[in-house]
Image 1 (cartoon, rainbow, N blue to C red):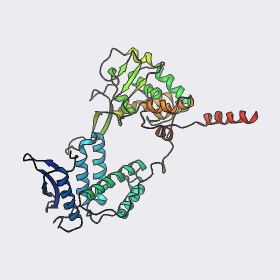
Image 2: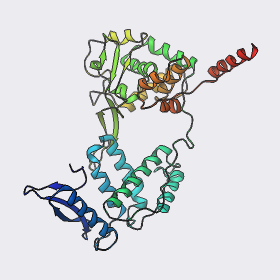
Image 3: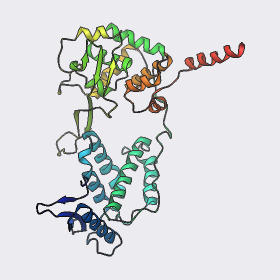
Image 4: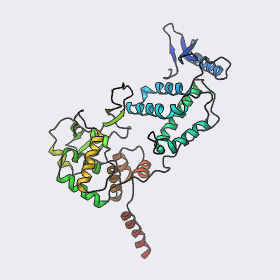
Amino acid sequence: MPRRGENIRKRKDGRWEARFIKKYNGEGRAVYGSVYGKTYFEVKRKQTEMLKKLSENALPINDHEMTFREVLFLWLSSNKLKLKDQTYAKYTYLIENHIIPSLGNTKIRKLDSTAINEFLYDKSINGRLDGKGGLSPSYLQTIAFIINSAVQLSVKEGYRGLFSGEITKPNKRICKSEPDFLSVYEQSVLEQHLLSQPTERNVGILLSLYMGLRIGEVCGLKWDDIDFTAKTIHVKHTVERITNINANQNDNKTILVLCEPKSITSNRIIPIPSRIFPLLNRYKNNRGFIIKGKTYEYTDPRVFQNSFHKCLDSCKLRSINYHSLRHTFATRCIEAGVDIKSLSEMLGHSSVNITLNTYVHSSLEHKRKQIELLSSICGQ
């Protein structure tokens, strides 16, 4: 069975046909050639031989030598079906705003690892579009992945030979600041405020504080996702603001979308803590989304974050990012002795290492208690 992306098919006359790009015309459009055979394996072999000849310049590859820009959009197009809308929009944004301005006009045959690594280093220093420093390690890793994947496609399709060097992938942990979380006192102050004014939005904040839900997951939560008999919440939607890649001149540059969670493990069922179950039970006859929006049925995460900051101001607490509630939940669970495996599943992580390395932060008070355990043993 032919694999997707091979450009191999079985014709109605029983023969197999394999297509390949033999050149590009003056407008940069691909001109295809074909080889034929009686079986899939025969035509696959012929296609491979033709691509090898083209890569070795035994045949003239094109009149318009392919640029990296064309390779990037070819890679993006070939992966569109398997990418989520938000991922496709993110990749398109990075390609158009970061990669193409620097590397887009480079001929694919002349592109090398040195040029790519210099580009990534420059982005780490001066990569932000607002001119305020470099891109984050996470952004750089995504850009490096896109470039590497596009280069591999160009080699596979015969547009260039194998890379002699290696593309350096930035380390996500380099220069990464320690994520913030609430102290026990700060959490207590915030809880008292939220419980004293149990509006739908305040209940949503409590869900992140007590269950580790991401802001998009809270915005995408429906009343039908709550099982009041089993006392569980099924996280199966998230709300995200993504780049509007089909926008015209007068359209909004971004749009809100309701989509599946970011990964398979993010689609999860979490027990509802007994402390906030009565608050949810109070509204259980409602339908639709828990936190309603004005333009959409659901609310915009940015609007919800603004509500959270107003809540912090009312409590006279320092300003923190909404995601810090998720860090706070994970840290409190560890301090309470919750096992890492259960915590990792409640957070929707694919492995316990992600939980330990990213979300668990021990407070100084907790460290002091742990060191005292050692003192008690030494005293004996």
